[in-house]
Length: 437
Image (cartoon, rainbow, N blue to C red):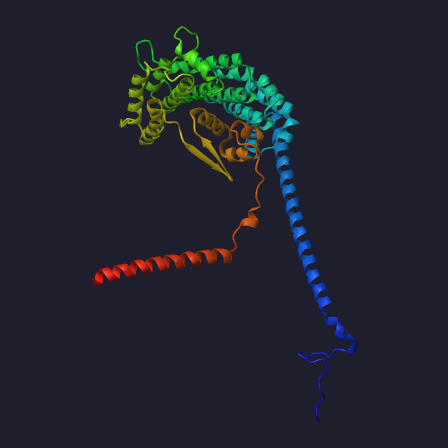
């Protein structure tokens, strides 16, 4: 029997009704396009909204963890308090959250002070490390001044306490200098603090018979921190004051230039380098006021700096010799020829020029406190940007919009390959003609 045709066979085209011809008009196609565009915009808005929600969620998680760390500052275990202090410090390094910190500044200040008074070596060091970070987060103004005023007495006691560990004392020296630098205290207080720092590292001066004192590595690290803190505070003084205090031999201000020169004889690299940078800073500020600053002592000092810049003694570690030569070459070039440092620090879309010893000293001090978060705070922290004269914050660019596609990279590589091929072909033709001759 003949089989009938199967209805609805796949691939068959259904016939349109005469009254449905107008359905496929241009107007409908425009409507379809409009619906596609609308759908794309809706998808984009959903993605953007999702990004905002995701960012908000991360912010909430960060604040929740930071809140837990702050709550942990009151626990009974010393080890737990130390871990909490370190966690809060890491959070302050990782992110700039001044609004969050302002509401909790009293709790943080009390916890730091209590750990400095009752804690031991590791807890005191962690508390001292957190103190300047708290001031960095609070920024310029009355809040950071209040924190500095509350913590300075306790930090001073620990810094001069011979029974405390050298590590904790060194951290307290840095905290005192940084808090005073950030809070912008009175000049009389700054000079008094500089004198107290000098009483700490004066133990590295030469003895009465001209011999180098024997100092352990831990105590030498303390002396280096005190010298560096003294140098940072020196950048707050005017060039005229530095010229007067370090040129007048009858002044009670310490140290004098010859005392700083004695520190260059230390057996420890950290002390020698800190003293060398302090001397470069003194010469820069003194010469800013008058070009004849310490002319009589300069030739003898230059000779000693040249010895350190070319030191090849085998009893020093190879790495220490390399570091010392590199550092003292820069110091020698400035003291002898007046060549200032020329360092470019790139972060994001910006560049920070370190073209003076004052600016370099301040940058190194912030690096000592902020560590890996230095670039972040240079970008986002208004206080840090104000200190280094970076101006207003730059809005972050959307990297996704400027990222090259795979096709664009392929085309650029193909064009570069073609240019190299043409250039090499010309060179090959020239060689061929030379060989033929």
